[in-house]
Image (cartoon, rainbow, N blue to C red; front, side, top):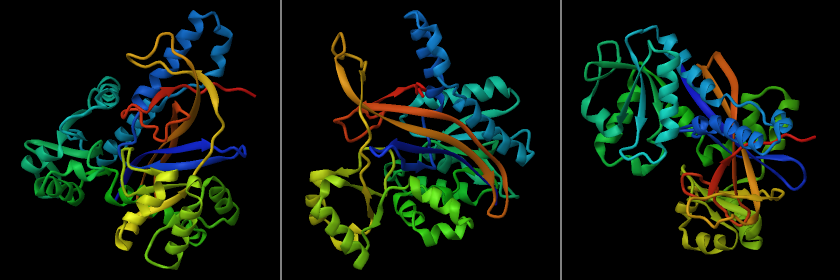
Length: 357
């Protein structure tokens, strides 16, 4: 009944000086590894340029160690010293460096903890449950499962991969995330959680409810009802104010601005209910340089937008929280003209926050 979550909650500053949540990631929350080395890299560059006095304005980032320490805490809870931490990975992993940093940190800091990597296909072919519902992969038991794959339909090639996911969920292993936490990160559930009456089920203090709601932007259902029809009318009347988001992860799936009316009109009413409508955040712009492979040299001065991700770790059951820490951050910067901000997709670049008064 215990679950582990390595979360990343993403925020954009709004033009009104408020900060608004873009989304919360509950599965494969990436870039904790690579973000951790951004601060030393930018510190080195500042020092090379003679700005040693500026280094104090770069906040320390311990995202990698914090995320990995939480995995090991979950491993300790199982009290099965011969068991491994299982990384569930894609057949072809484009973001492999970020994953490997986690693996290397655990191997170096906790040499007595074994880390193994398997695809869903490999788990489906070799996995089984032991007599006590232990998750067994060949002759290796996995007591903690860290999903870096399995968050989108394309990762499930057939029944073998779905059987692997079900096998993991049925096992004794602590999942990161469990299927419940996975669903909590979907756009539809986040839209539902933003409602005041739903928040009240989980947060008893009205002051805290209002503080949480302050970071939410407008999130609207597109269900086949009066509320859904009203949301569609809002989007058609002023599409530039909104973003259409489907039940998908990994970036590149949203519909923005002037493309929204055509997308909505092409959907059946049943298909429409699988999407949500989100009020668009309009962040302030900054000037800077984006350095890309094969980009222009010298790079031109361009207008940029930055999105801040805060990493958190939590271990607990539905009745008790055992471990709960904020462990680091990620800053992602993109061209102001780009709707998508995915780094792996080539739309954005990792960055470091610079603190000013």
